[in-house]
Image 1: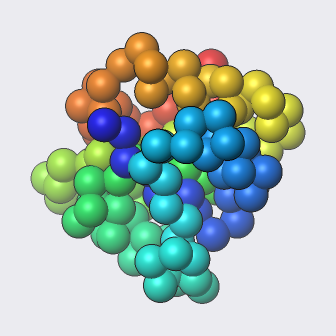
Image 2: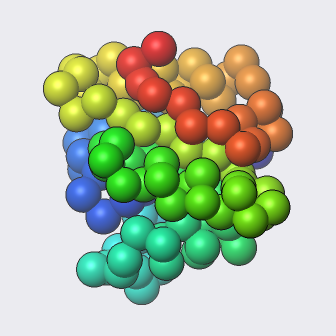
Length: 116
C-alpha cells in the first residue's frame, strides 16, 4: 500500500482530488503530523521514519536532502516532485495510475518528476 506525505506548500486541490477519487489512499499532509513550518531535512527524516513517499513541488531543495540521506546510506521511500504548472487533473491521474500499476518498493531511492 502506498503511503504519502505531502509537503507544506503542496497543492491542496491535488490532495483533495486524490482523496475524493481514492478515499482509502493513505495520504497525510505535513500539517497533519505537526510539521507545519518544519525545515525540509526534518520533513524528509519524518518521511523516512514513517515509510512515506514525499509529494512536493519543491524541486530546488527537497531532492538535495533526499540524495544527501541516500549518500549516508539511508534507505529512502521515494519522492514525487510535481510541476506546479501542470493541471491538477493530470497530476491526480498520474499519481493514481502509479498507485494502481506499481508497488511502493518500485520507487525506493528514486526521485520521480511529474508529469511523466
